[in-house]
Image 1: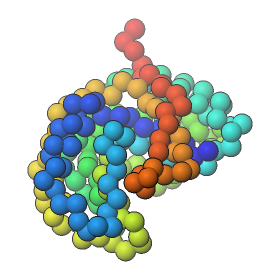
Image 2 (image 1 turned 45 degrees about the vertical axis):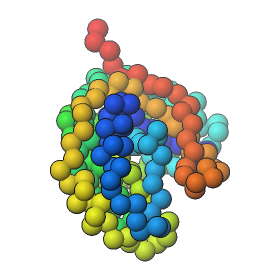
Image 3 (image 1 turned 90 degrees about the vertical axis):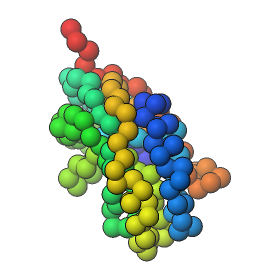
Image 4 (image 1 turned 90 degrees about the horizontal axis):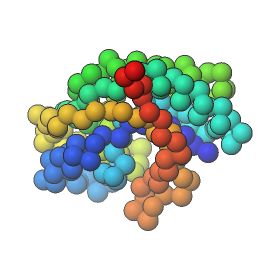
Length: 186
């Protein structure tokens, strides 16, 4: 199964971003917009993981996550990856997000899970092109350039499965397999 870990922004943060995106052009037509209910900050991506590896991977991630304190974040600004992925950025305690991502990636090593080895860049994917060609994203980037959403507190990490069959709209379908709390004050 295809797995990743994620932090969901608060409902207020997602609604604020949804309202900010309402006037943003939905063109070109080949942009596929992500489901706002599943806007998320990816912590670590593992790709395909064998069913028998999942319990060990989940346990190792839970251990890593439990050692990191909750952190404050806000959705801010926008950018793109090669004209193919439109994203919103992260503000707030960004070093804490980096530390969490590093710990989760390291926890996956003994479980033999594949890890994304690219440098971590915290973001929330808003849309992606449906083909290999870059999309002109100037209007979307301009509309979101000064955006700053409300702060929210990250208190848990989800272990998420991407279901193989997309929704009728062509969007990925996600299923939270585990909710893993960040450290609590003790």
